[in-house]
Amino acid sequence: MRSLRLILNGKSAGDPAVRAAVEQLRAEGYSIDVRVTWEAGQGVRFAEEAAAQGIDVVVAGGGDGTINEIVHGLMASESASRPALALLPLGTANDFARSWNVPLGDVAAALATAAQSPLDEIDVGLVNDCPFVNVASGGFGAEVTARTSPEMKNLLGGAAYSITGLLTAAQLTPYPCRLVAEGQTFDLSLAMLAIGNGRMAGGGYEVAPQARFDDGLLDLVLVPAVPLADLPTLVGELFNVSGEANQHVLYRQLAEFEIHFESEFQLNLDGEPLHGRDFHVSIMPRRLSIVRPA
Image (cartoon, rainbow, N blue to C red; front, side):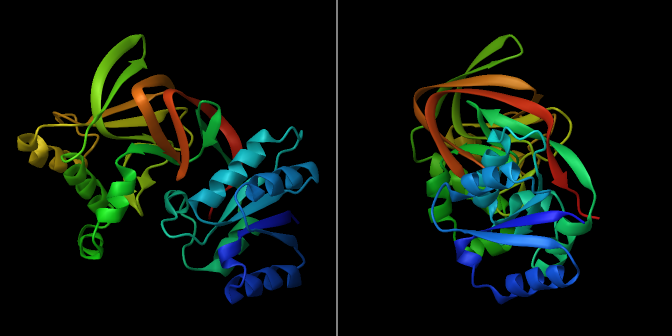
């Protein structure tokens, strides 16, 4: 039987469903212990500790930010036998878990999956040597979150964030940048961008619909700043970002590229911020073991 280490976000430490599911696995003979994070960075340290102790599977109990910390710790481990990753989705968006088809809202099923389901391998994205497993995004993120109304979220789901973002972008200064990819250079003025190893962001919106976790490629989605008159066309393209007839949205699958901004820019790697002007982006094919749901 596998040994499991549940690294649990402190916000969920008192959840009786989590306690009951852990006790059930122990009753079935599994070795599972728990570490609870109370401050930033503890997930990294706990994952490194699990690797050093020879734990078979590290279960990320939380949202995308918790997963990001644990992936940092696993990738930093120098252990010859790195633990596999499993997911116990307890966050708000749970975009990585959605893309990976982990049971949502069923703690017992998610932990049983961690203990029993087969292992697979997925790619890991890198931005300036910082790993991410799902989506890196940038642009008018803070304004999008603040300005998207509950009614719009209920009506349009994840797409509401993109539409609100574009309406916000029309009122703000765009981000001039230079993209270097496949031996070519492009000067751009961006409203938003996304880099997908997985498909989903923003609570289930397929920001990179062609992305696969094991294809050795990252899906780059660039949303340009456009005149107000072109905004309706751009909004329509967001519902089909990979459409070949798109006039504005750029969708490319790449193994490596660079983006250079004129001023400091914030990229969110699985929701965790990374600031800078120059970003080198690449993929590490099939670098992380992960439990695949049945």
